[in-house]
Image (cartoon, rainbow, N blue to C red; front, side, top):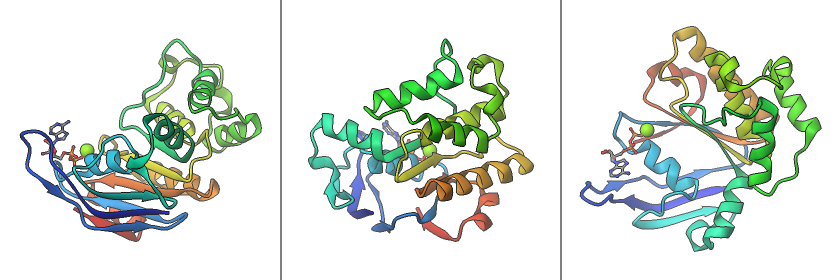
Length: 208
Ligand code: ADP
Ligand code: MG
């Protein structure tokens, strides 16, 4: 599904970061491991079509990502990739359900109410569809971010350091939620982390 070939990136003034080649097949679950500053977020941005690497080729379903026009790239990202951000990026003036609706419409996807209701139910959020972000706990907000990442039925779910600010118990819960949701939604999963506690939950690991 995804193929990274001879990728490296150099930020202006920065050192060149060289990334090992990587192939991710449909529905595979991977950890992206590396110390802070090793380039994990950089690589996730490259895979998501948000950052063109200075060298190398990113192929997604046989499409060379950085040959797409900006417009097609945005469309592609919106439809194929769900990103769970480290801190939830929700619109405060909109309810949970409205936040999910807008995520669908921005990607040009049809809002599949049955699908989204089943995700919200799975994530224990059925009672919170009409709540505003300010009315939710941190854990609930994180689950809404996962729901939002899944709303467009992506083939790849990405989470960047989803457990770094959590205690052990919540870390296990978030990992179980991400792996289960990826599986139920037939999506591949990449979790970037420097958190050693995460290691025994997912077998495949790509090291930076
Ligand atoms: P990680 O996510 O593993 O902590 P990052 O990908 O964020 O690592 O960063 C890798 C390296 O690139 C670091 O040295 C960081 O300072 C640098 N870097 C990250 N983003 C930028 C940027 N927008 N501009 C310049 N340098 C950056
Ligand atoms: Mg990072």
